Image 1 (cartoon, rainbow, N blue to C red):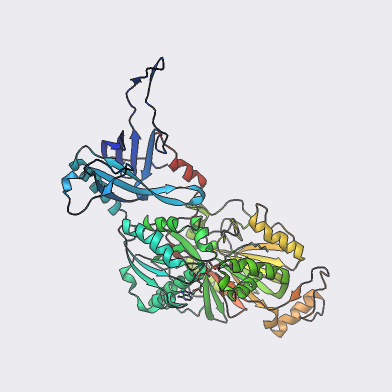
Image 2: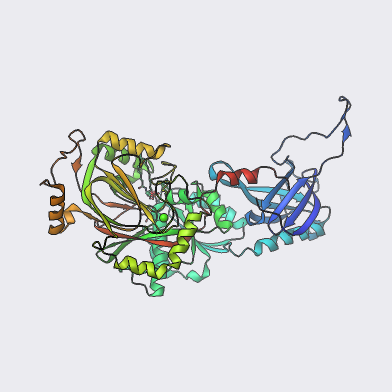
Length: 567
Ligand SMILES: CCCCCCCCCCCCC/C=C/[C@@H](O)[C@H](COP(=O)(O)O)NC(=O)CCCCC
Ligand SMILES: Nc1ncnc2c1ncn2[C@@H]1O[C@H](COP(=O)(O)OP(=O)(O)O)[C@@H](O)[C@H]1O
Ligand SMILES: [Ca+2]
């Protein structure tokens, strides 16, 4: 809990009909109900404090951090005092200033499951001048918070998820931005890649403090491509060179979830709720995030922040794109279909294990708000920056740093963050970090349908999805994949020597006669977009972008701030 610091104002004000001691410090606004004078109760043989209907504020004292105040507005008591419901009406320009005796503070209130709401409380002052002092003091405090955005560029995908993006923005988000005094330029996209191309070339970014994306992971992907490209082009970085160090983007990105999976929003905020996301943007949160660049033969393909999945997740995406009319349910349909299809894929995975960092993919700890592992590893990578990049670039598969695995896989997944989403609340790699400069490479080897189902179902339960003989996970900085049909003759010869068996690629699985797997071609699912190439070179760029988010908060934060406090 934040300490109050030096007091700016302290007054006795009224909330509804009760007297409160209200104080404002540099960090906290606190209101504490005054203890009423004892009154004599005729039917009880003792003095007692009058009882009030129990309200959320009936504790000793409540407070809100100044950093979580959304705005303050002046109210005016009408001729009869208050409205019938006890609330106050907004003052109009025509009405006299000095009759303003009440002000309302709008602030963040934490609800269950990481949701935030905009709560409000109205304080009545004994005189107009005091009311003015309170309003201007709170406004001054808010104006001093430099991390809050004032001008935002908003892109709405009207086509994502259940096609509700425009309605969600207009009804739930725009009114909050207006209350917080944020001005916006809103663009409703007209075609795929409209936002990406607009950001890359057309827009004057200097005018804005951030970009807001209303849509799903695919739409977010458009935004980061536009921003990252623009930043690299402005800095003269060659996008096609996989070994280039990328320049971090200065503008923060806010995600208003209106897609099908909304994994990036869920894994960075803890919920996919548009109001919660809007409030994180308003208070000016900042969460750095790793980005993977994906290349093929020194040609840039895409960036990824959440899942790069070949095999099962690639096939689910390819199949589901043909069923967009089903909305988000397309993933469930295609998920079951691809599970039953049970294809396996042969190829070679080589990876560069993350060295010198703290944390492993099997840790019980999670990446939470203010994560020390992200902080430590991020600092380590930026201090060792150039040296590390040079070592990495010069590492070759022959020098022992790179490790190589050849085999038959049902799925090859790289999770640069947990990939938690409503379908899988702990995600594909529960201990992955948002900003530690690594990705968790998960290899699911060919196994029976029953075993694969056990693995998949563990994404939805508390059981460890990696604690299975056919699953392995490595925390890496870089990896490459080559499907067997793309391998060179010498690599194929090596494969054959290693396996000791001369199998034809199209041959039905003999290792697991009961599994019924069939070999096939797959594609990569890159944050919900299909990649055109299968042989890829992936590299993690530590903390390349920043979101208007703070990571998932510990439940204790929720408890501290909603419970009455005693200072
Ligand atoms: C047969 C039982 C299956 C149970 C599987 C449960 C595992 C779910 C893990 C989900 C991980 C999701 C990773 C996120 C991927 C998104 O980027 C991507 C695009 O999202 P959007 O743009 O919002 O549509 N979503 C997917 O690829 C869907 C994967 C669904 C797999 C069933
Ligand atoms: N106006 C538009 N018309 C058609 N497609 C669009 C439009 N705007 C964006 N897109 C594309 O829609 C795709 C899906 O968007 P997304 O918001 O991620 O929804 P979902 O989560 O349902 O996949 C993305 O590939 C994006 O590029
Ligand atoms: Ca990471």
